[in-house]
Length: 270
Image 1 (cartoon, one colour):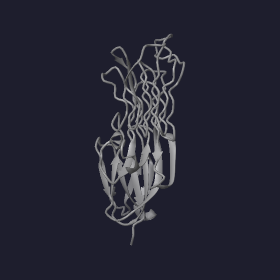
Image 2 (spheres, rainbow, N blue to C red):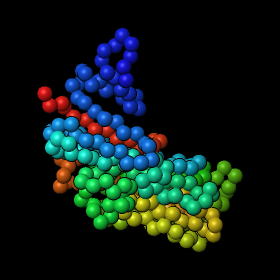
Image 3 (tube, rainbow, N blue to C red):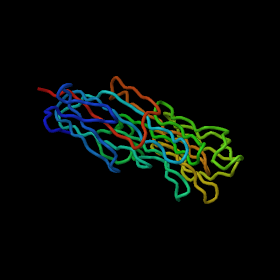
Image 4 (cartoon, rainbow, N blue to C red):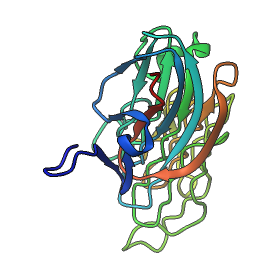
C-alpha cells in the first residue's frame, strides 16, 4: 500500500514488513474469503509458495494453524488455485448445532484444475502442491486443541479438568491429529458414549456428539484431526508437501492464529 511522500510500495503481514522495491521481489497475498482464488503466473520463473492454516475455535486453548512452503517452477500463464482456511472453511470440523465449536480449515495451493476445497481432490491428490493444516477446536476453558501442520497434526490434551465451575469433567481419551495417510481418532469425555458423525479423513476434520450435544471439530488438513464429544479439545490437521513438484519444501506446526493466508513471491523476469 502506498503512503503519501513515500515512493516505495509497502505491505505488512502480521507485523512482517515486505518492501517490493527494495527486495526486488514481487508478491501476491491471499487472505480468507471463503472461496477459491486464482493466481496466474506472469512469467516463466520460480515462485516461492507459502501457506498458513487457520486456528480452531472455542473458549479453551484452540490449536493454531500450521505452515508450509516450497518453490515451484512454472511457465507463463500457469494457473494456481489457492484455498485459504477459515473456521471451518476448507475442512475444519463443523458441528451441526451451536453447542459445538468449529475446527480450523486448512490452506492449500493446487495446480491443473480448480476443484474447490481440499476434500474434493481425494481422487486427484497429485494436483495439490502444498497444505498447511488447521488447528483443532477447544470447546471449554481447560480444553486444548491440537495444533495443525507438520507431517502429523497435534493431539488434544488429556485427563484435564474442563470448565471454570467443574471439578469432575475430565477428557479421558486423546483426540489425535491427522497423519500423511489417515485421519485422527476422536476423543471422549468421562467415558461418555460417542457418536462419530464425520470421521476425520482426507481434507476433513472429524465431528462427534454425545446425544444432541456436539463437541469441538477437528482441524482440516491433508488428513484432518479427530473430533471430540461434549466439551473437550479436538486434534489438528496434518500438512503436506508434494515433493514431486515442490523443491526446498518445509513445514511447521502451531504457527498461525486466526484465519489462514497464503503468499506467493517471485523475482521479476526483466
